[in-house]
Image (cartoon, rainbow, N blue to C red; front, side, top):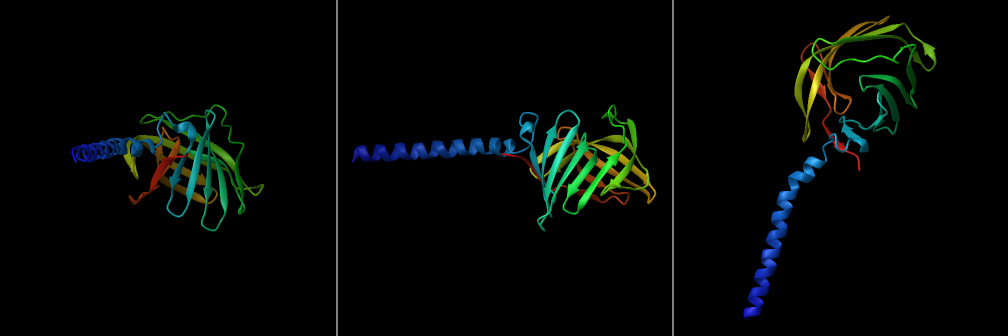
Length: 199
């Protein structure tokens, strides 16, 4: 009888130890799912609600996003520093920036920094009116994406073309090299719902 009692106690202690270890490891596992400098080379998935994108960094300046839409269409975007799309290809068509001259282009991530780019949009190989994009860093803040939190820079974007002028703020996460939200002049902010490291 005494031996059985000890055995049960040992099992109970063992189970308790496992449960305690699981509780201690849970926050670590949850935190590991967030893209960080340590795991960013694996890429990350970002949830836009109606569609999800897999994002990977390609070299120093290029970021590729592959988005799968509910209707089955797969769209591949190539971004310069994650700030604007150089090309966009899907079954719906293809667009690209022509004569953008981005070899030495960069935008410093500090308040007051400015940069612009002028290019000719090509839509299915047909040129449209020349477009100019002006960017200005206004400041920084913290943004929550699901369980993950990131410092983002608020970048004012003014886009001028033959179709008129558009202005809004891009919320750019420098760690991710990706625009994770857009804020409109009326104050409305549209952000991705969540982000996690790719397996």
